[in-house]
Image (cartoon, rainbow, N blue to C red; front, side):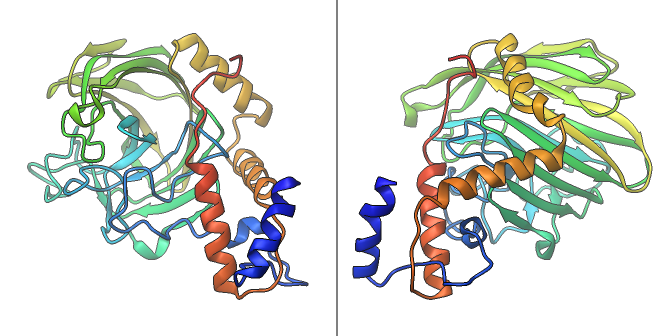
Length: 343
């Protein structure tokens, strides 16, 4: 309430950005997540995020200049990662149906055939984003990807084509902003059941961040059983694994047989403490929502609308309102929670 009373006179005095009287739009409807995402930093993108959320789940498509993160003018996606904080990245997930690839050798790598990466061209007109939600169509895999998030959890929903071999790939080493020294010193992905994985990545950022060290723990839950789990470390693929461990380039992929239009939901819980805490975070935040994508997206949207709606303004143009609420959103999205649900 104090924020409302303090800001309103300033806005009125300076040519306000405001909600028009009688408008059916809510504050959350004015946020444009694509503003400021060309030649932007690692932290700015159309990421699915709750207010003050640890998880900023969204697309990464760069490989030059900033090295990682999102660039609006690039019409491809390397994958969807969960952390986009200063010098910190973690847990990239990507649905694939094209030729098997376990990395993206370069930004110019082909999308199919020899030396291909698992990245995909996108249909730019299919790309949409709003607070707590992101969606895009992956052309080379014929998959629609949708993302949402809570404070410490991500929820992916992938709509697959009919394929004998559809994969959901988990990559623990990938470019992060301009931090060329980023590396994974130790990692593990383990099969808990045919619907759940757990693991960690012991990460170290490079000299630009004074060698920041952190261990990201995760639990991954699939809405239906996978047929098999394969993994890789430093280019060596192992099939039908119980776990994969190692340092450097480490990852795994769950295999499914999918029918046309079949949806698979992937829930993730994260923690910087341990795997049990990652599971507790997921149970606490997603359990009451039934691990359901739509319920999670609605709940996060409502959180944003309540928070943004604490500032009421009048006057101004539609463009002013978009600029104001987008900047207010960025102010809240830039501050993140790093503890667990129990402290």
